[in-house]
Image (cartoon, rainbow, N blue to C red; front, top):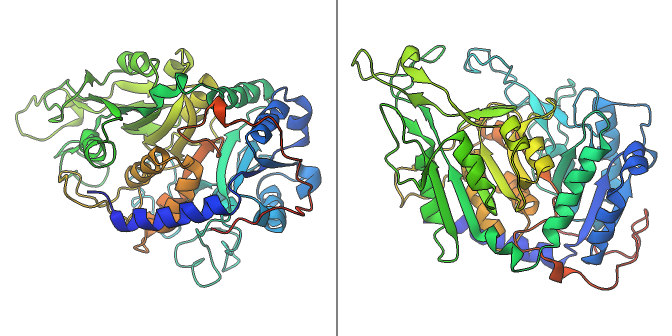
Amino acid sequence: MKNIVFFALLLGFVSLFAAEGEKSLIIVTTTNIVANSQTLENFIADKRARGFTVLLATETDYGGENLKGIERAQKIREWLKTVHEDYSYLLLIGDANAKYGDVPMWIVWPRHSYSNDECGGFALDCRYFETDALYGNLTGDWDLNKNGQYGEHELDEGDSGMSFAPQLAVGRIPVYFDDTEELDIILQHAIDYGNQTEEQAIYRKKVLLPASFYYFKGQKMTTYTWPYTLDGAQSADWIHQNYLSDDDVSVTTMYEEEGFVISEYESTFPIKNQTLIEKWEDGFGLIMWFGHGLPKMVIRTVWVDDENSDGAAQSSEMDSPLMIDSTSVFNGSFSAPGFVVTVSCEVGSVEVPENLTHTMLLKGAAVGVLSSTNVTPLDSTDYSDYESELDIQRFSENNAGALMFEGLLEGESAAFVYSRVREQVGLDGSIEALAGKMMINYYGDPTLTLYDTVDDKTEDEPDEKESDSSGCSVLVF
């Protein structure tokens, strides 16, 4: 069953959002991008033709022309505080690198108290990572203790500390090496998506669920032994039954059919890299995958054979074939993009050029992506039991993705739904719930919904909103 309490809250926020000026967008970018992009002007015109008021801002508006990284991020956030009340959405376009980017993400430290062992022995340091959460919430002090490390569990929490109450629904399009040609391709995909006819958009009620095993019982980790078998198909199947069971929604599953232990869940096709790309090219409006991730790839976990018959998966008995990577997406041919939830670590790591999230947007495999910048936590839903309620005390890409898909099917934008999920899910006060809220971000045009078509456009464009925001409706979440 669905979490009725959460969805009732969400519906209330959605109706208020729609009543108070939903169609209003701030675009924060750079003078260089404005000067060199051949498509940004058309993108803005398309939004205005759909009834949006749009405010375009560069460093000449938000300040810090000679600043990069955190200093530029601070300038952008302070400027947003002065204009956000008249707007619903924020689109960030530029170099997202938190250390030297011109439209940077923020580095946050929710796991500041962890040792490397508590990070699971991963090669990367899981204690800190990038987020856009501070642009969505403009009221909280995310460095309450003034030590220069934002978003620290307990240390930056309190009445005036960090908050996930949203003032803006945020999306981001990263730009690497000032490559405005790549940006223009991504912007054009968003324009083309919105200008499909209703007939062309029929594919959007099709759902693709590729899932691999994550771990097998007895598998040796760095400092411990994994206690149970974890098949991503279990979560996928639970989400299918509880959130994707309407008659007009078509679900295609791709689960593990190779190895000593195969998935017990019914699979439409076996999960293989080439098969996944070929099926995806047919067009799906909603895609959620499950597997171990790195910035440029996701792998399957296959227990090839129990060679010593001990019932425990040994490293010598296992294989890690490719599920999907940036290269296979880049070489694919996609004409019907959808919204993607990546239940994988690190595939939203913006500091890595050609990361999987950016490649999906560039190639038109996706118009919106929910993905993580670090090692992603689990929630506590009993996905083995179809009758269990969705856990909203912890925070993961599983529960966030399920609720985002629910909101999309109800007609809301993914970025708006995720802004509410960030506030209303992950309530147990734990380090991992806090980390999940921060590391999982939304990429792509934040205004897009599952049902945008060319019929939404009007003949007359609204007047351009002036920078003083006078005469505009106020958004109240």
